[in-house]
Picture 1 (cartoon, helix red, strand yellow):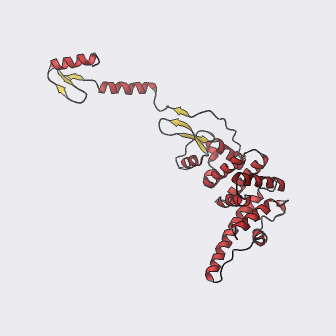
Picture 2 (cartoon, one colour):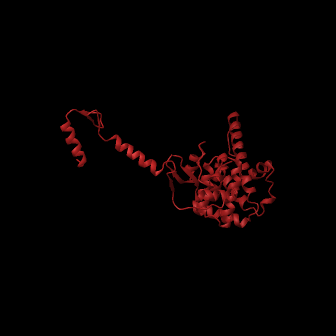
Picture 3 (cartoon, one colour):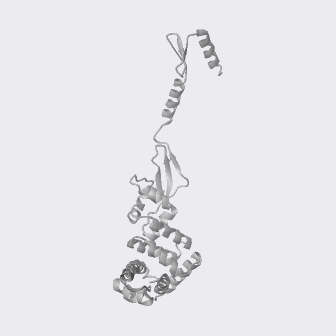
Length: 271
């Protein structure tokens, strides 16, 4: 099935007055009904053509499996609301809405993400998120492995996970650096977009309290310890006298006491 046909099917589906009448749980529905609305990609006869057609059939089936889950999450919305949403998508993306939504649905690698995308769509329809945030949140959803999405609530408070998900989540923009610790164990917290992904996409309300800026913690060393380190450095760089011989910090020594006395006098005067 070509992309143009799929795009038209998407728009037609969004404009269906009552999504609940669609047999979304019947996998054969999409292949027998929706695919009938568009022409299959023409291929030449023979074994190669048959294998190619099987591949296209698989890709079509996989897409419709994702798209049916997405539509299932929109049953409570009206055709007018979905049509307005499609117009917002088309205006902001400057592309046919069917193409844009097709790409959004198809790029999500886990069927459960389609439900999250549907929740974000409803949030946009209700006006609780902007159309710009809708695109940004989809980008985050696309890049975050589904197994790591379940880790996001842990970042309500400053947190770091040495298993590796912190760095990945931070790279997507869903986290922000909250605490810089002197021992190297920096802590991260949900960014504002990350909080929106949880609230409107995953429907988890954490009721976070935010503070401005990034904290710097020096809990691993006290002021007394810093003074002791500085004093030790000063002592290590002072000349010393042992058995009548003056030793310099670099290990050299002088047997001429007049020279040594002059050195100490100059040192006392700050030379």
